[in-house]
Image 1 (cartoon, helix red, strand yellow):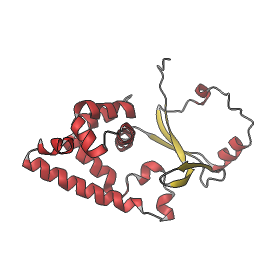
Image 2 (cartoon, one colour):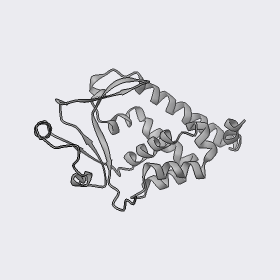
Image 3 (cartoon, one colour):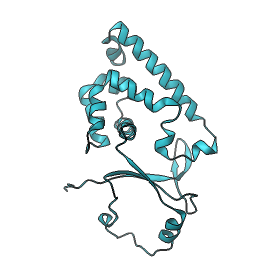
Image 4 (tube, one colour):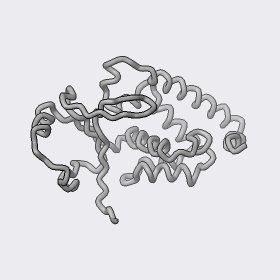
Length: 191
């Protein structure tokens, strides 16, 4: 019954818009799921999520049905978690209907919105820098603040050709090469 509460609270016009957005997004998302094209797979994460209009459709959907979430995503300093919390607090029925009430899913949406609104800067290291870093003798005990990024919210893609790949295993999708990472600097961190 909870799953229908959100949908039945919409007007007939909103219900038609909801279904049209959901169908268009689903088609765009499905196109990217089975992709094996090496040119597309070699794109950094933030570029792959924008393919097939999936990201633009997701943003338009949220502008229509969760405008406070979109507004929060545009504010400098709001985190993925902050954006997800806005969804839970302002649109709890939508959070449960569309996103199964999962904080990890909502945080991913927050990240995609941050990317869409160009809050996240993009950098790619060179193969030469990757080689130099690989050949250093840095220990694991180096304080993280020594590596403060040049911007508070960035994506760093590792190397041009991934000569020193790091792998991660995901139980649902198998082994993946770590292509880069998002870094967020929090200047007022408290224990």
